[in-house]
Image (cartoon, rainbow, N blue to C red; front, top):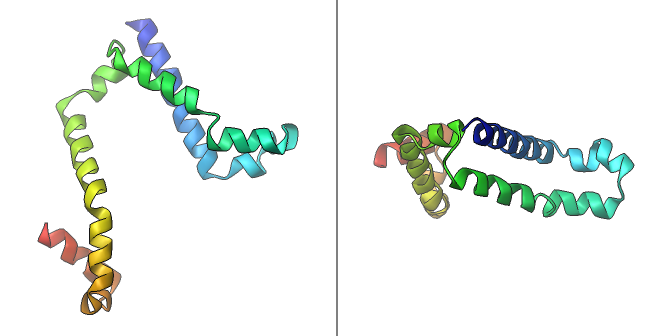
Length: 119
């Protein structure tokens, strides 16, 4: 269990670091851009981290580590289901807001509260 926890922790840390690295645009501006060829940096930015994500999914599949057991608690499962349902309907809400001119003329805070109170 300790080995699985260590592997999960390392992989999760690498995934978070990659997301932060990508979000901060460090692939183009950071130290890698100065050392590596431009094509390799572009590949790393776009698809070079796919094996990292695959290894992370594989490590969490076995559900042997502390982190995967923590994430399988009912609270986190419920949060995942809620966020997925919001993801599924968010574009519909944006399109509805654009199509209704009266709603689109309201300030942003009022528009958001209309969507929250309707659900």
